[in-house]
Each structure stands twice: as structure tokens, then as C-alpha cells.
Image (cartoon, rainbow, N blue to C red; front, side):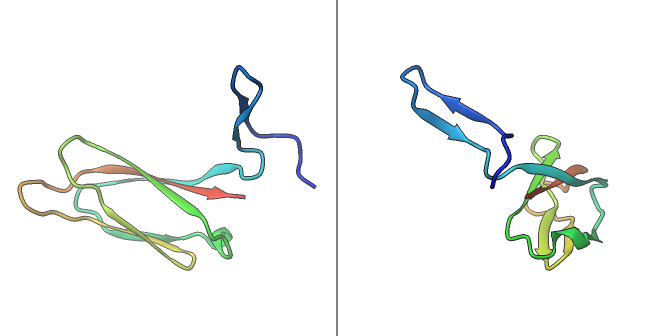
Amino acid sequence: MMSDYGLKCWDASGNLTLDLTNIISRLRYSVEVAASNSDSVVLSDISGKSTVQFAIALETSKLPPFVTRSGTTISWTARSGGSFSSSAALILIFLYD
């Protein structure tokens, strides 16, 4: 049985337009990375989770790090190419419970 928490929105006619009561996201990890930094982190509590989302904040007109997941390991790799350089970034990792 689901708990009564989350977000529900209805339009003016009373129709449900958004229902986020079944899946609640939470910020699990954040890291600030330098423009040339490549690294990884092991997050044991993401084992068995099918949905893990990444958000990356960076400077305009620069390349974000390449972020991947393999099991419980989240990795990021600096990249560059063309006329764009790698950017320092804030990587946010969200889980859906």
C-alpha cells in the first residue's frame, strides 16, 4: 500500500494531470569535478535500482563530463573535442524509490 505523499496536480476541470505519488526521487550523491578530472564512486544502495538519473550543471559553451553507470559504480570522464573545452561541473545523482 502506498503512503499518502508526493505530488498530484489537477486541471481546472478536475482531471488529474500529474501524479508523482508512486515514484519519489531523492538526491543520493553530488560531486564537484574539475574540468580535467576523471573518477568514480561506488554507491552500494543503488544495487537493484533500475532507474538512476544524472543531472549535470556546467559552464556555457563547454563540454560536460561523460557520466556512466556500471552496477553500483558511477564514473565520470572529462572530454574535449572540436572547439569546445571540458568544463568543471556539478554532478547530481538521483535515485527513485
